Length: 388
Image 1 (cartoon, one colour):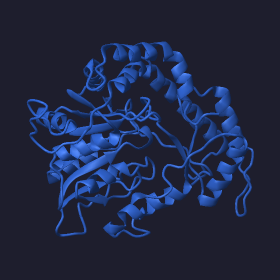
Image 2 (cartoon, rainbow, N blue to C red):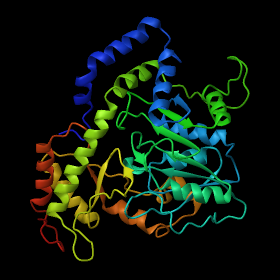
Image 3 (cartoon, rainbow, N blue to C red):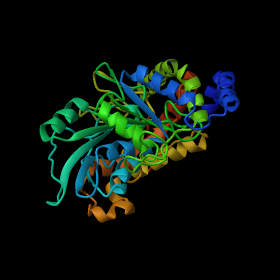
Image 4 (tube, rainbow, N blue to C red):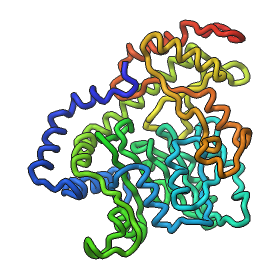
């Protein structure tokens, strides 16, 4: 069984992919060819955002956005420690300082109820917030944007995992001043290499990011208005994404069905007790939200329990993954920030309990029933009752 079955998807659209790649080979415009503009137009139309700027990766999308806001030394940017390193890495790359907040225990996204804009360092100036749409579920941008507006901060939506999701009737990538997504192959919409995009309705920011994408280019190739990066996406990757966009709405709906089957099956075997606790906890979907289910992640009781479950599934050749085994504030790369164990207890607790099941549009009902039945067949460990 595949954790993410790209082969099944490719089989559906192989002819279209090959035709699109052949068109690139025929016209020979491998860098910034016509496919880039077509892709950007379709991304813009899909999200309802005025400007979509295709680029080389989700990481470079975040970097371009921060550079457009002139983020640098002395600036503090608030974000979550429970995410892939790229979210905070780009802040540090520019000499600014990531400042972490803990997560909501139901959504895994930034907790928005008790925020304090404290940097812990009088020399740092709060500059912005990066919200992360973890596992395909948008963060609470009504709350995030309200806090940001109150304090004069920008907001970047890290939608690397959420392209195709919805938040109260609005598409992911349209929920903040700037949004960034990734087209890494494992994403809900992925190419066959690296790729990404930046979204904004702000004309001035869009102009700056278009410039930053190609070495700060201005009116012509050798006129450089600012420091930039080599952030272009290849025409062949854009051609692949165009083929995948044709079936993306259908795949998004199939992901809803797959996720619902998982949730129904897990809750039937592991119902909550009177205190609302269950031996295995499926993901929560708040009202008004639609996840694109980049991952289907559940919580075990603790690290030992998780290991036993993963071993049981592994013996049946069912792959699992852990996103993320160590929060960012405890990563060696961020040791210089001075955080310690216990600073973000929810993120730390979940990193010991969370694991993800196979998730893609082509999982069959029979495959999912087998996965859930193996979960329920019994994982016996010291101090645990039998599951099921």
